[in-house]
Length: 76
Image (cartoon, rainbow, N blue to C red; front, side, top):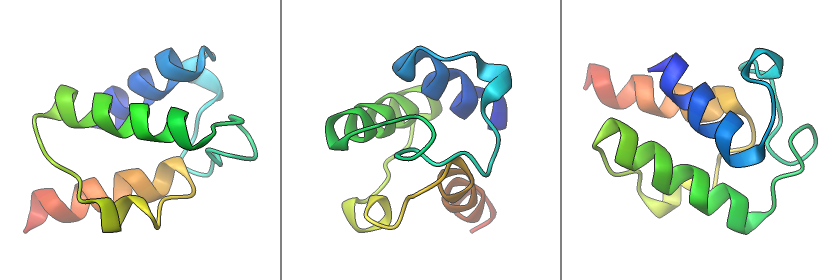
């Protein structure tokens, strides 16, 4: 899952996947705007065949936030 999320974000933001960590800020480090963030989530949902509710997206600030949410869903 980690590799998929990193790959999707790297492709979306046109950055080297090696530069992305769980601490990477979507806005501050990757310069993602709201459209970028929405497209990232849509692509992650498609790649992982799941749905991330809008209320969960509102709390996402870092790559780690995305991964934490996804890990929580997998264990439930």
